[in-house]
Length: 454
Image (cartoon, rainbow, N blue to C red; front, side, top):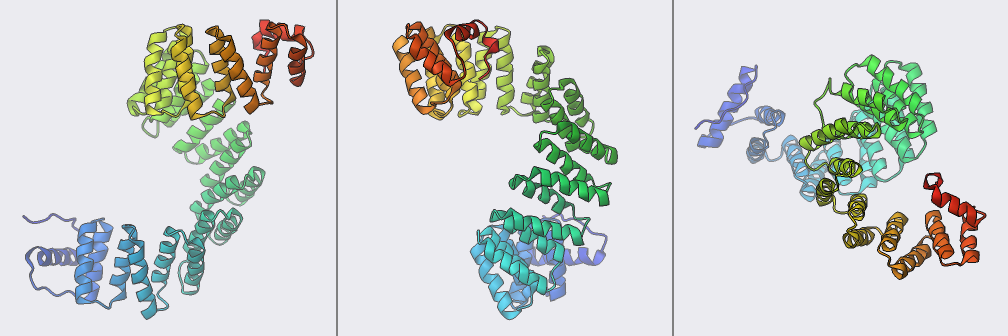
């Protein structure tokens, strides 16, 4: 049966491909010159037919074994298959014969980068510029290699060099943001993008990156203004709506956040993460009906969205539907077994159901995952108090304080227990460590826990 292939407008190419595939399928002794093989290989490369491209390369190298174009293509195919040592050997052969073949040098630099030898890759990319490669592309590659080395200052310098000579290079703009973030230079990032916008006022990436930079500085109102400029320039820029919504969420303006998240659906299909965030906004507004709707929609779009399963569990827990909550927390834990928040949330449900032994097991499981979280220790102490296991609660508290000697919640708990044991002087010593001067002050806080802010 004849293989179907993609026809081009150029009848010569179509004829060439038919002849080549006849050679492959029937073994007909058809000869192709170098230029014809180049056209055949380019055709398969363009339609992403790796199998026939490899056949064409093998055949071309059989007939024209010394031709560097075919060797270079073969080396690049090795690279794509992560056969880097084979690629390296072939590229070095090409360069030995053609020491000014910048295509081979570029491929060689790429291979060294993939092998983790980023310094060597940079050295070769610099040679490529002398051999006539495209400056902006080569500078970009050098900058990315410096990123791989963690040398973000050098990387930043190259990206700025690209923009100075090729101001339309949007990739460099996005990478500049990444460099500033990696260097934790958020103010400088804002200054850079404001300066860039002065010369390129309609640059969507610049306005977008300015918004991200403002958000990184927690200047959310300014971030929203920047995203509004993006939307004014390109109405369907979904990421701008999404980030703008995130900024509103950070400002606790949940109604506005919901509106922005939903606006993003006008340009792209609904996705699990956005539905999750909408659900969380409704949750903050105590609109449990809509919150549950979007949590379930988030799961419908991605059944492994553990935060949505846990979110539903939290709502059912708040609504005192404890047995329903258990199932959703268990599903969240099945998806993300190392998430201690889910485990503790499930333990809290067990406590409300007075299933203290199950709660104790869950909290101890959470401690095995993360023993450096003082809140988990605090929760375990409370469970032992509820179980009337006085000795266990005091032992756990003593151990927790040895790990977290400055934790205010634990110090307050120790002061409370000592006071209950009629050890007022020792209790007062712990209270003074956290700025509480009297036992009466502590008792007032115990009667009004909403006033406690540790």
